[in-house]
Image (cartoon, rainbow, N blue to C red):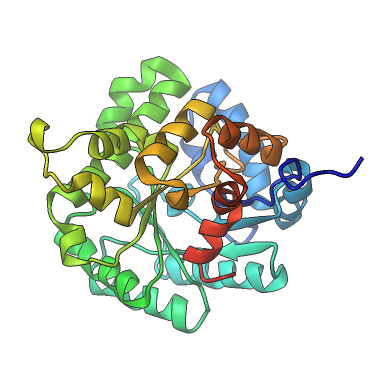
Length: 321
């Protein structure tokens, strides 16, 4: 019996994948005190360190390719600092890994988005010299969110070059302390709150009005902000065009691959603004193509729309198609 097109496995490109490799000194384990957390991050740390584990994970999870990033949060000291020139070294390493694995790895350049013109210069270097077609930034720094004037040069550079900005969750010390008693879910709630807050700040403070071609990607942890901005409008004291701004500028990944969550974001943002993403190796999802197809079937997406979510939207954003 011949497999039909509708039953064929999806070719998935995982937009949300982390890596560091052995060139960088990861500091997370040094900062963890809880034995359970240390054991869990010991597993994650070993995967982050290994180029072989990164490549082998493609077959192990069923994905066709990964979009990798190197967060400075894995490398910073207790005060949140990293050694000078770290961002340049990160981006050189990402470009090196992508060059060694064409078609199997794509990359995002890590940028200190709150560093003003320095961040913008590194965006241009990473894109023009290293050939990287997307950037990775943290949601916040202290009290600053992405509506801050310090972030504007980096965001403007990304818009000028036509490359997407992956806005990653960030741990806020006060929220973390407040929600830590709830365990792993509390930790994710704290990070998701920051991811949501920075998106809402960008909408509220007119960042997308000033940068009308800017494209940003948030994670599923920002689902609260996406639901509020995409589902409420004028009658709730929010700009009437906020849902339209969301559909024009905002993408979201499928971390967790839960049918209800995937269906909600497809409904709010459209199938052309949802990207397959798992948060590897923090989360190691098995049988990703089958699980994603189940979620997309439940959302009522046709074969063409499913292909967009699985890989097409990522290839289009990164200009890799």
